[in-house]
Image (cartoon, rainbow, N blue to C red; front, side):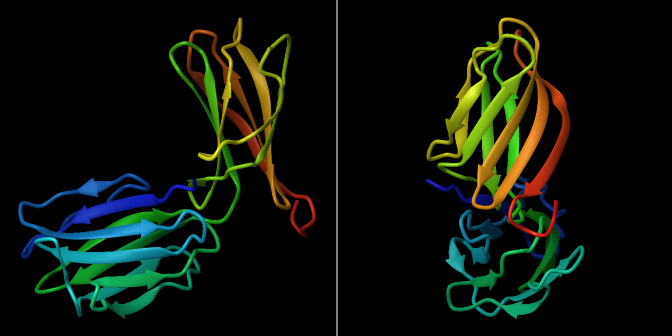
Length: 216
């Protein structure tokens, strides 16, 4: 099931709250006014929600600014549900959202773009999880191919589960692996080092290849 990316920042009258960090940032104030930004993992659209004491704030002014060319930049007003809908970005974009009720507050978040992405993380026991994402959410049924230097039992072909992940066994020794993930007409590749003691020794290289597109 495709997940949703949640971003939350809380704001109080007479107080400006610093921006939340990408994908998981939260700032809190002492009172009950909050603003949340939720990105839909499948479509990539985002919803800004303003509430006070768990009640939607209608008519709040929302100003959206972005780094780069984002079609959602501009001024809005929350509807009767206290929300504003923002379009999906064409690429991963930092967005600054300012909300004005009686006073104003702002937060900076990162909206994930449509680019296919692949990452690998290892647990303390040396097993690894490969994650394939789009709009920051897991991509189910993506094809994953793992190749390794030396004898690694995790080498082979896989399909991601409903969360967009594949589990790999622990290597017997520290091993360089090449991971290729494909979905639709996009393929992403990354190279990492899996440590038999646990941990990924850093992604050393990555590139995107669009097989039937104009970019390579």
